Image (tube, rainbow, N blue to C red; front, side):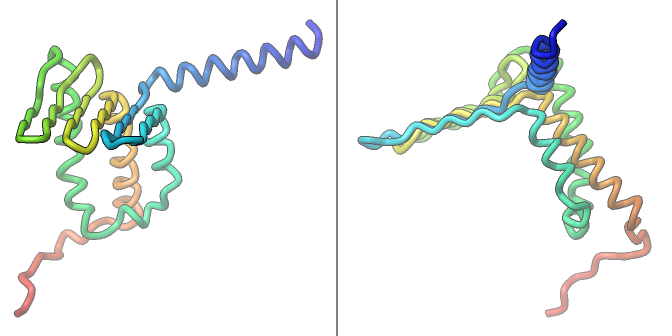
Length: 163
């Protein structure tokens, strides 16, 4: 095998790994179409793995503070919701219709899909369940790292603000 063939083989392996990583957590897509004359069409597709990977670069200090308790409460609920959604067939989760607008949130395949149609724009957002789970796990890991480095004070209490 020549050197050129080896380099080409390495690039092929790297491309295969990239495809597997993108396919693993799916692709988050956002599409916005303005309904005005000459309106814009914006389409963004991001590999689902990018969000949890990006979270690793956020310093742990940003996960410390008043929202810690909220995160500790919400993350197990997110995991439960994702598990439940993974086990049900496609269904409408929320639908709201009013004059001039229509919003529908549904589980479709292995994704949560939100469609908004109003007088100004059509918006479509699709987020794979695996990407939501991976993001929740990455956030939980950050919160756990903060807890390990600086455990919450179990003797602290919440008091009413003085007036």
